Amino acid sequence: MHILLVEDEPKSGEYLRRGLTESGFVVDWVQTGVDGLHNARTLDYKLIILDVMLPGMNGWDILRELRRTHDTPVLFLTARDEVEDRVKGLELGADDYLVKPFAFTELLARVRTLLRRGPSREADLIEYEDVVVDVIRRKVSRAGQRIDLTAKEFALLHMLIRRPGEVLSRPQIASQVWDMNFDSDTNVVDVAVRRLRAKLDEGFDRKLLHTVWGMGYVFEVRA
Image (tube, rainbow, N blue to C red):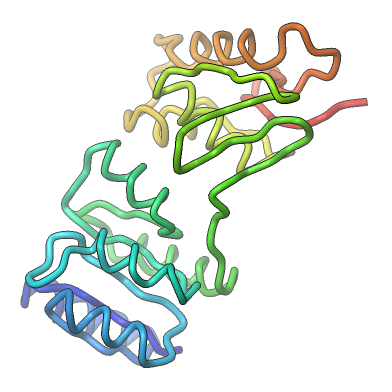
């Protein structure tokens, strides 16, 4: 399996190159954004591990350019840990996002998961039943009616609609939407789900956002 690693920091790059090689991968390591985009476009890789802050061209721009022509899976590996950064990376078309510092075993698990999936890229428009989410413009409609959501409500719906039929636990939701460890004493997830449900389901016969008692929430059509 041939992997492209775009990382400008020598110590981190060598650590990753060595670890991935010892795990059975063939690794091309480049240290500038320009070289990263060139290799990504001209060579055949199964996966790209991409930093954001790079000399010459940042990771956002590399991915934006790459997605015009290639669906190669991309994992962002970066010190930029704000929720907005993660959302931006995923909306640009990244397949995963891991924040430094990280455990190598976790990185390896994510790499193997992405390689099992194969090339994929999220569509700009996500549709489920009569709900349409415009990921780029951050707009939502149901049955043609516009639904105004807050940033967190949009992030919550985006997470749910990408995984219809899958029960998502409160800790999963808290981690991905709020970037926080779930505290059982807080009801932030339940409050947000209640607000989203009111905007999305009220007035419609077919309810989409359901509570699975003792487990979490699921986005699906039920008979």
